[in-house]
Amino acid sequence: MSLPESSMRQEIKALFADGLKTNVRPFPKTEKEFRDILDALRAVPPDELERKLIIAGSSNQPSGDEQSRCYECMYYLVHREWCDLPELSIPVEAEWSCSLWRI
Image 1: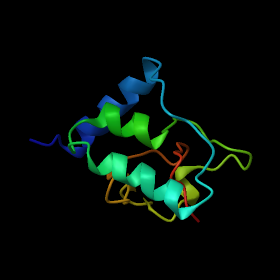
Image 2: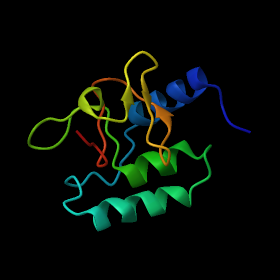
Image 3: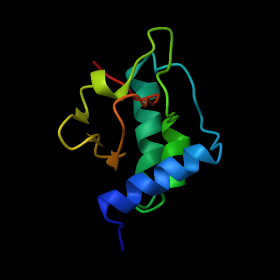
C-alpha cells in the first residue's frame, strides 16, 4: 500500500535529516547512463522511498556545477511540489536535486 503524499514527504525529509547517503553522481552524460538509472528505479517497489532516493542520487540541496534544483527540472510539478518522472514519482522540494535532472 502506498503512503499518502504528506506522509511520503515527511518520510523523505526524515531520511535526509538522518544523513541519508545517496548515489550522488554527475548528471548522466548519455541516454544509456540515464536509462540505466531509470531501469534500476523500475525494479524498486513504489513504496521503497529510501531505495528510490539512493538510486536517483537525490539530495536535499542543489547539486552539480550549475547548482541544479528540482525547481528547474522538466519533471518538477510546481504547484504539487512533485517529481513527475514516472520511475521516481515522489514529493520533492524546489531546492532539492537528483542525478536525473533535465531541462
